[in-house]
Image (tube, rainbow, N blue to C red):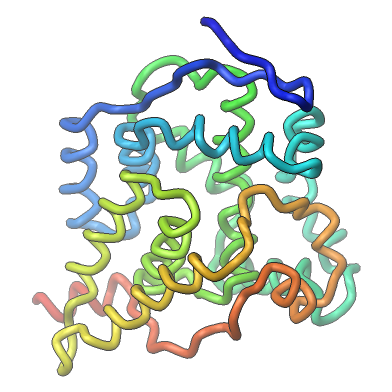
Length: 252
């Protein structure tokens, strides 16, 4: 595959497009039936991201820190999976906020990898270094939760994806956010509060620094408030959580 160099010495493939609309639509139906079916999220992303990975890789190339990350390609799961080490970070740090999030939600850094492995594969892995960019986005997702302030409920996930949509303009993410808007349109107000939370997530993403290219490994030790200031993140939102069980009860 042809490639082009950049000033930092890294190369990106000239073209990498992910598009399989029928696969995406099948996965959307399954996700609408079960919002907790995480492998379907990965199937949609792999099927309908178009050139998003390339654009993300190009974004990394545009900063010194991003070029360093592309060269070194660290595996942050090695850090995030060590809960004993995370617990030794100071109270109030990003590391402890992340640890609180994954323990509260009953998830793990390895678990999100396992969920992706269960998704339907479009073809061979993305070419280097876009394969690393893809893994980086997957492996830092729950760090985004901790930094941005959304919980792991259906509404919190949708709001964070709306935030991500504002930062990446990924068509697959837009489709998933659309499903989330439909699924959360419940309650006495017809879903207006949920829609406001999701739209606010998008607007916060537009205002914030570009989270994809952040050196999360070095941010873990910092106080969460300082991380949020550095990344131009507004105060964590206050919203009423919506779990999958709530959605099932509403439609029963």
